[in-house]
Length: 138
Image (cartoon, rainbow, N blue to C red):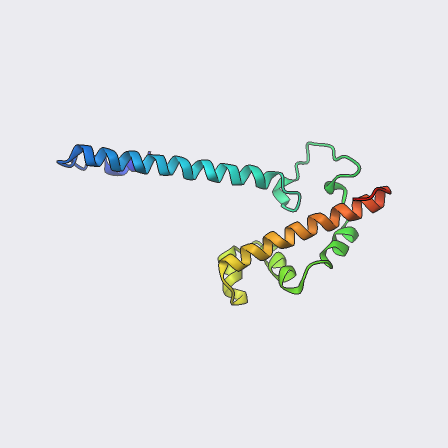
């Protein structure tokens, strides 16, 4: 819609077929991009390490990740490497990957990888803690 609003007063180009092909490609790519973004948002919604995944309406199962105490979370944080912990803390402080990368002097991709690994380690450690709390083995 922004495209149409922006270009509505500009006369159509002479080569209409080429313009239509360009427009079709642009629309297709925009659709794919939006679809990918939606998929990422949906997968992030099920990630228990993301604050936005916690919904207050739902009652947490007694052995779910939502029942983790502050002490258990602190214990789980100890399983992270120093680099992962630093990136995780900066991310939780609301900094973007780019800002974290600049502050730590590393690439944005390295920030994303460290954060991904930190979340995976935290999830595994929290599941282990919950299993030990309830007497089960993971």
